[in-house]
Length: 366
Image (cartoon, rainbow, N blue to C red; front, side):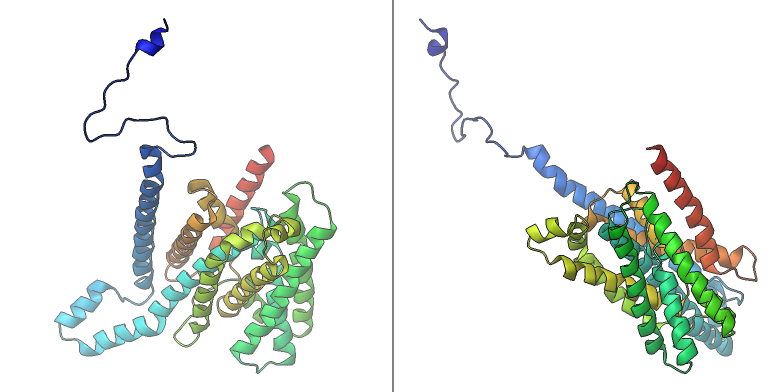
């Protein structure tokens, strides 16, 4: 007699269903709860990071040579110093608040532009300042300054954007023509291309006595930002939102034309969109602020190490980290030699270059 046949199953409790074997692919209760908990935890961390950036923005607003602080404003208000109070609020409205807004906008946009470039090229060591995009935008500004010196700001931005698109497309064409087996060679090729473009630009700037103007574009500086001269930067906020919406498509396009076409996505259209976004962001920032190197390289890599490589999840983090990084560098630039100011592009370049070399050496060891 089979013993298994004589073993009766335990009676089910009234009102319950006997447990059967789990169906294939059905997540357990704890596993199903993990994604939601992880999403809420990520949202709380992102909110905390955004609050820190907001605090840095407040600190940046009240850092400067003139004594415009919450305490000075309160003292002027309670003491009845109406003239001093209105003069301080005028300084905030004309200079301090526009500067803080431009720092946040430029940091956010350049960091996201660097991420878009890395997604398209599938290389974590590239960004607009290491592939010739920024140098090409500066060349466009030089051309319009030579032939149309009285052109409005939008015309200058248009020339810079066209040249930036051409320079970035040239870099991508070089990558397609030259087989690069080592990922570390990709940024080196971009840096060499950028140096060639920068050398030609410097030569013609010297011939036409525009070296000082060229230097103002090549070194990012927020000291000249005032009301009426930074509003073009709000355009990069819209471009950043478009980049977030299309981030997944840039990831797919980075896999190659055949792979992208098999998924029903127009490869050329996605690449054209990515080139346009990167070029426009670079052009607007160069025209308004100047070049801020290594920002789009360092921030996405830091976020990747801390958060991961999920694009939808990392884009908001990249934007927040970019704004916070530039805010910290801008505050340091204003206080390190107070009351004088160092261009923020210099501070970002020093810190970014050190981190860039660290990542290169780390990648080589791997």
